[in-house]
Amino acid sequence: MTEFRSTYQKLIRRQYLWAGIIFALVLAGEMAFDVVERAAGKYLVWQNASREKIGRSWEQEPKRIAADSLLADLTRKRRSQTLEIESISNLEELIQYVETNQQALLPPSQFLQIYRQLPCFLQPLIAAPDSLVADARAQRLANVLAEGNRSLFNLIMLDAGNRTIRRTSLNADKLYMLFNYGKEQNLGVRRQARFANYIFAADEFWDLFERLHPLRRRQFIEAVPLLTESAGQIIAAGISSQTGNEFVEVAFAISESRAYVYYLPEDYVMDLLSPDRERAFDFYRLRRQVQENR
Image (cartoon, rainbow, N blue to C red; front, side, top):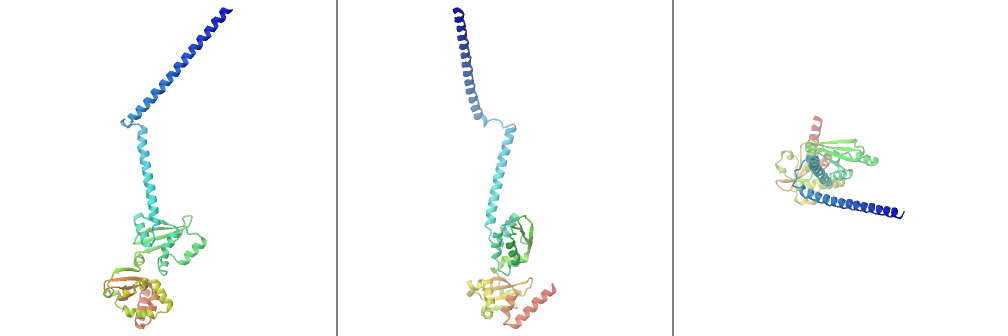
């Protein structure tokens, strides 16, 4: 019995020994494999730059890089366009932007800022003031889309659903008038045929101006900033006999070749001419004849 137990214990110890040896070998092999695997990975990474770029992964990588670059370019372009649109402060800047970029979408606040820069009697060319009041009361004006060029420019009022509320089109003549209102130009007033019948020396103009009703005189001052900014430079004033639209071209000469040009309502000019009855009647008759022939 004792001998059997001794033999059994030896056998068990031998099995444990072999199990321990096998476990140690497996552990050592696993560690060695891990070391070899890491070394192979580092070697492949080191060699990767000089490897021939073939296979699906190498085809997808340039596409991914190109897509990321395109997205970044689009993002930069959108940001640049947004900043450029936000910087627009007048009608001429708006049309210059649209001519290059085809369209511009303005929020109501920016559109109204541009609108208010125009003289009150020119504002209806873009939108009737009553319609803007109605839009404000109903809170329906969401955006204004601008498109076109200097030949034909469109402003489209949109609601929150991008539905058209109204549309305004400005032709080349109206745009020229809006752009050049109150600007200094190379213009010899005394040498232009269209001013020949209604040209006044500075003293003559100021005499007519002083005879205006105080309300009309104040309206003149508001419409013609030159009268308060550089009145002493005016040497002559000319009223155009051309009657292409409802406004009258009035030029204030500051030299023989330079003048400031304004486009004023007909009733402003009629009131200015009224002390000179003959000229006032001729001017009125000419305007009526043209209107009847249209």
